[in-house]
Structure formats: C-alpha cells, structure tokens
Image (tube, rainbow, N blue to C red; front, top):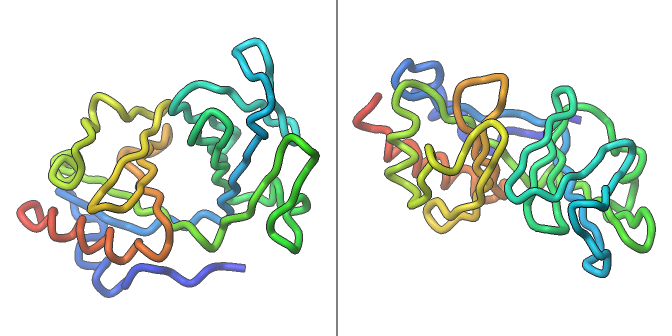
Length: 188
C-alpha cells in the first residue's frame, strides 16, 4: 500500500532536480522502531539480534543491510528504514508487537516522512536552518538528531547518493519543506 505524499508536490516541483538545490520527498515503504528493554545489560560484547539483523550499539551509527538502513536513535532504540517486507509478518495488527519480554517492534510507516536535500548548496541551506555542524557530524556511516525549526529531525546521509535525508514526523513534513524552501531562495 503506497502512502499519499505529505508534501505539496506542486510546490516541490519548483526545486526538484535544480543543480544548486534540489528538494524531494523520498518514499520508503516501512519505518520500524526497534526497542530493547533497558533491563538488558548491554555492552560491546553482547550482540543484539532480530530476524538475523545484528544491532550494533554505536552512538549515531547507520548500518546498511542491502538497501535497508538501521539508524541508531538511543542506546536501546533504532529505526529500520526499508522498502522490503522484512518485518511485515512480525508487525501484524495491532501494529505494536512484542517479540518477547525484552524487545519490541513498532510499525511507524505512516508516521514518518523523509525529505532529501541535494545539489551544490544543500550544506549551506542546512547550516541556515540548524545549529548542528553538518560536515562535522553527518557522514554515510553516522547520523544525528537535531531540531530544525523546532522539529525533531533525524539527519542522515546515504552511502549510495549525494545529498542528505531529513526524517520527520509526517505531520511536520510540509512545515519542514516550507522552512527549507525559504532558506533555499538565494540558491534557486
């Protein structure tokens, strides 16, 4: 089931594929929140695993599994972004599913939207709307969580494409898009 776009695409077309700055909504089929109980004594010697996915506990780490991404959110919480049906069978109705007493997966597919920002000046635009030092904190292996216009945003790069991804709660995606568009005006 494809989810309806959250951002006004008539506005989006004004800055799509512009060489200076390009903004686009990226469709991912699923966003899964993976949580482990805080009672687990977790150190670097213990390996957490769900469905053959090893979950590293490295701050702000992005781990790639084919075209899927596992993004660290906190010491006991990760987001798995995918276009496959990897956890689909685990997350049947209700959407909140305990796997066992120590871990759970929540299907948040309709709750998140990802905006891709690319082009020659995308770093300049991001520096105008966040206090996070993008070049210092974001690589294809590491992400960050920051506020952009008071919106909690997961900021990450992909190892396959040049640009940066901003994952936000879907209800804020249009507002974030407008904020980026305002900050981009001098580069369009």
